Length: 144
Ligand SMILES: [Cu+2]
Image (cartoon, rainbow, N blue to C red):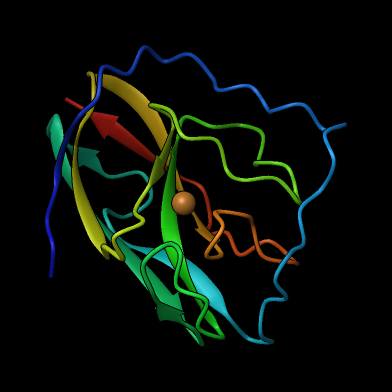
């Protein structure tokens, strides 16, 4: 299992949605019953500034970005994001939208003290959300 350390200077700013009027890309249908979830930390947990997030996925497999294998995708961690990425567009890549195109199933983040939200979204080989979107529950963590 790959571990990466992301040093993120999170400001608490909320990421803004990308322009919704750009031409849409083909989307990939999500198989029935597929589910994305955050294994840990738990919703409402108090954590240290270095927090390991474990990514859960049911009914599909994880594959690196660029691999067009049916019923697979890769994880994206949405940090302090209120508005989900637009359908038919690649998920933005910035400090609030972190791509795990290597097929990682967990990551260790450095978060500033305070309250943050975490949510997973699975993207297809082109980083485009599935149809319908495969997102986890958005959880809140309190960073000491
Ligand atoms: Cu991606």
